[in-house]
Image 1 (tube, rainbow, N blue to C red):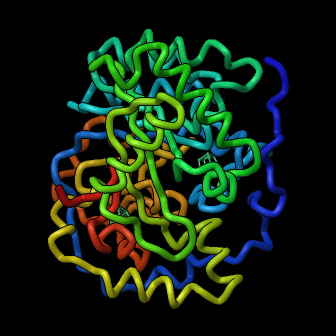
Image 2 (cartoon, rainbow, N blue to C red; image 1 turned 180 degrees about the vertical axis):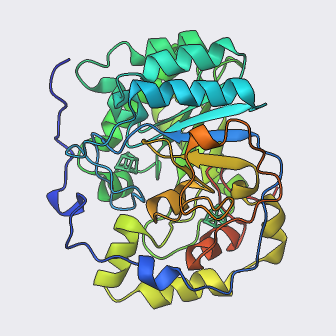
Length: 338
Ligand code: SF4
Ligand code: SF4
């Protein structure tokens, strides 16, 4: 494989020890106690390497990150899938396609009949060495959930880097050409997250705008738009602290709290796994190094969970959880309210 292009890389975005950390401010919280419900989704982070380094990234992913899930841990994920009734395998990163075991995992998981989601940044489909990836995803019937923070070039490139908009449009056209967005077996969903301190607008209205604009401007079609609130952690959290905006943003999230979102929080039905195989209640807790709490152990590995059920286990919460309950609610699958 040729070296990964780094044309989108912003050095100031890369994980670095000088980046301000919101974690100490998030640990003490009055967020309501919540417990796990039935598990249906295993969300696996295959590694933190990415060809982009977006301003809102809650993973601090970028081209120089080296953390990647190894084959033994990938096989453990497959063992877990086989020993539990999991409906959805949700693959994330970084850019999950950069993991050398990505295709192996996808093939094995799809062979069980479960849905597999690839959280794709679109630009990876145009990187040298990944020219066959879109075809592979289509052949396997993988659901592609792709970030596109706006249908306007300027807004996408402010968050994601120069050149990303047109690379993304080219990738969406390639996916459409393979049946994504029209064939019911090839779902193509887009993800919007706001720029700055705003909460996302209503998901259904924005979805109509996206569909109209992308169709008119580029002839692109897709299935659903998911709106996701920016979490006050990692790179976005560091930016809030650096600009003195942390308390203002937390005020917005807390003031927009809606209790009815508690019932549909994604952590109730999802288990998040890091590249080393450790378990968390969600991806955000993974980034904050807040592991799943089980049987008084400080960390729980997936190998400890093969014979365990997690129903009713308490969920680890923090101030960042107000990001999931604000307004229409937010999860990896978009707004929580219908
Ligand atoms: S937001 Fe996604 S595409 Fe952007 S740097 Fe993070 S993992 Fe990569
Ligand atoms: S951040 Fe959201 S998904 Fe994660 S534990 Fe808190 S409420 Fe649940």
